[in-house]
Length: 286
Image (cartoon, rainbow, N blue to C red; front, side, top):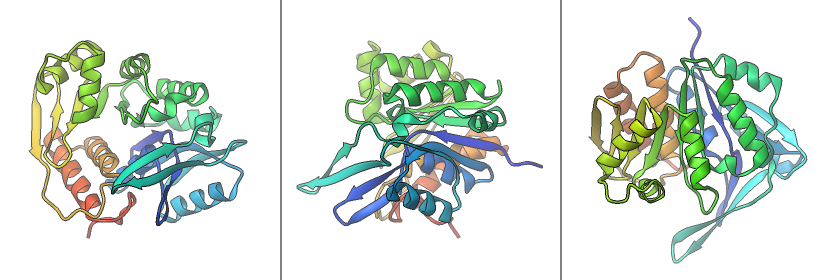
């Protein structure tokens, strides 16, 4: 039996930290962790014709990540991370390769076979990558899961972009801080988190809304039920990629026959494990 195909569309980049650079990008992290849970995870993005692009592709392939990454005439994406009194500050470079992800026939063919597709907000900051994202999501089969992991960064979003993305999605993932931003945008500021999540599900006809609360909790809402679990207490190395690993484990478990409760448990345990290791592409748990 063929494994389900899961696609992450969007940014593929280097986080350039004071002590060196690390490969990443939310859609790639998602694809990697989904592939650790019984599905075929693919990342769709773009890099430049440069050494950083060569190295980024090589590192991802060494981790077993299946890539559909095009080369374009823009520099490979980087995020400059600086520390101000210990707190990180991010400069997400503009007009880079992943802002220009081309729509290719091979990516459309992959999308037509997909059981799930995940997309975010950041890579839709540019018209080219936004159009590619919309086309690939539209190309997925009618019964595919379309996951919008909002991932708000800096000022690279608008109310209209969020609304349009929710219209494309049937699963919405958001954290508690981002929910406050969305509540204000949508005129839901007076509602509790619980009521706001239910209102968003109703307004956009979603199958599921996933709310994460960092070190405290996570909840999965449907129109009929809610599943809430505490976040496990672990010794944190860093939280890079934890949210993406949550999404990857959740969707893969659902696609391989798990219930919402089983998928939620797998997601929580995976994210906690990722936090105990440095970097987003952690080795599988023993």
